[in-house]
Image (cartoon, rainbow, N blue to C red; front, top):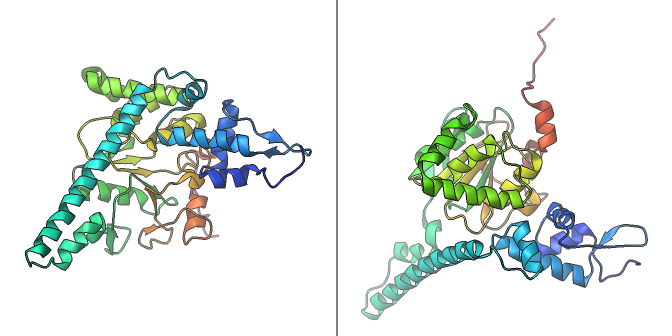
Length: 343
């Protein structure tokens, strides 16, 4: 075919669909969409391919795995009930929050009808959590005790920074300060996941959740492993309302990291997550959504800053340079920088 204004290259198609170019390549690799080829051999997406890709992206946003998406597109609804049930639960939770806000507005209107003017604080509460910081504390070392405030909690907050920037200390401080939060540290890997397996064996409900999450991820291309089991045991455990996760990519190959990234973004997740990562397979900057935030710990120990997920935004390039592929991480594992002694 020849180039046409109706046909988009992969970058343009991904931008129009609101997904990453990597996601489009994954859809193609799994046989879900087949871009046409130009006379020069380049991939191109016409109206039909864009419509198909839009359906895939919408199903992914609902929390369907790629295998489930394939079944839906093939007309087979088998196994979709759990994904729909999880999406329904999320919608009902949002509906409950909206109903509470409507009641608050109704109450203020009733007060006005009785001649009682609402205060500025009452009105500010209508804006939700933006009225006051979701979390605030004095930063630990290596910072100078500066005040840190996070105005709202997103479904996913990524913590990124170069080596020695203090990002782990920030993660620990968040886990300590946020109400009913827990820190999922690297100790989960020290015994080959034996402790996590024991927890799963002792808790049938946890075992079921871990099995369901792993099955979803395997359908998305993940490889089962002790590291994945240990991570999922922490992610799916009851108890904390907020979870801070340290380096989830350790022990996972790149396809598993990509499947984990999709799992973390699934609509079925109901509690805020803070994820400290150095992997571009986990944090795909092109796929960051509206309910996600990026916290950068700069190399110069400037206080942590929120970074918008688009090129040119302050701090974006610094975030990008902190992330690397699984191949690069494996090649540089354990390497440290050494300053030569003066002659």
